Length: 193
Image 1 (spheres, rainbow, N blue to C red):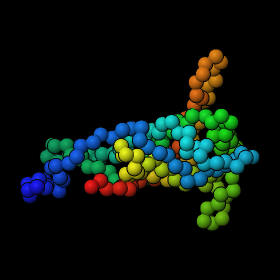
Image 2 (image 1 turned 60 degrees about the horizontal axis):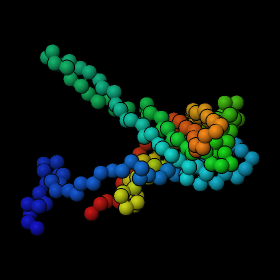
Image 3 (image 1 turned 60 degrees about the vertical axis):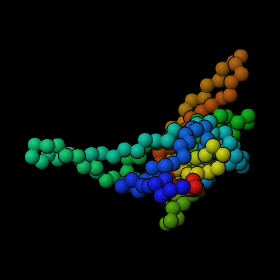
């Protein structure tokens, strides 16, 4: 190899890189906890293993506009973690319908203001504390090795889709849960060599 093989451009990016496309079915979803309002012990595999799809929300920033010498100038308006979009996850319904029942009970009791007993630092039971602390979407490479993950923090269920039942059809039942999130983070797990 010559030194020219390792040349970098002005931004420090490599000119020579292996090109490999991302396959969008290479992901895992992990839930840190679940506010369980059901009368059965909830195995997290009923959630983690039945995820069919995840919609990663877009990330946008508002622009401020000024005019200088009759020319329009745009300035990104720093907003931090405000105005984050919702995360949508579609689940296949397990045979005993435990995952759908768990989400349904969470939404039902939240609508009536009942908490599951989780408290804040002051020891107060607040409805906003009935959340999933983190939902991790782990991205895998083509060898099924984790390479990065998106971590959504303080996820509160705000919509549960209807469940359609149809006779004389052999289809897997599905439902969709939508979460409002307070934080989003992208972490690199493994650097490609």
